Amino acid sequence: MAIEEPKYTSVLKEPPFEVRDYGATIVAEVVVTGNQGTVGRSGFRRLAGYIFGANKGSKRIAMTAPVTIRPQAAQSALAWPADKAAMSADWAVWFTMPASYKLADLPEPENPEVHLKDRPAARFVVLRFSGLTGSVKLAAQTSRLMRFVEQHRLTSNGPVALARYNPPWVPWFLRRNEIMVSVEATV
Image: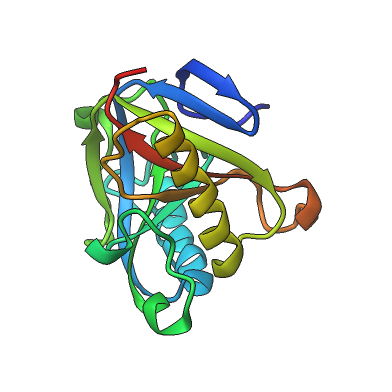
């Protein structure tokens, strides 16, 4: 069975870059303090608890991909923090809920750290890459992404986010990752 991913329409493809229009979605989100290496796991566990039944009614919700994270600090809006000092910060971690749900249909989380949110439709510039997602690599990928945004005269309205599509047991060289930033819809 395939894992559901958010639907989008491709506006422009220049591999490995793509400009995508995403429809409105609902996400389950937590804010976690720590460094990039630990917040993904910690946030994932809290969100997985919610979809595996830690909610009012003990309802199970299908897993979706990707797991997305982004730094919360304003100074990180259009850059990925590459040094250890900047990495100990607040990070948003979220799952997109299956498209069959409306916000009113989702059960209330038992964990008060888990918040359900509507996300409006938006346009994103996306850079797809494989491999590991260490902070130095992400800083370099973010620089590539922002150069593409500038070269195409797009206006980013950040922040930059990392989307990871594979479970941790997938070999590093087969992992699908994307770094993405929202832009104004002018293409």
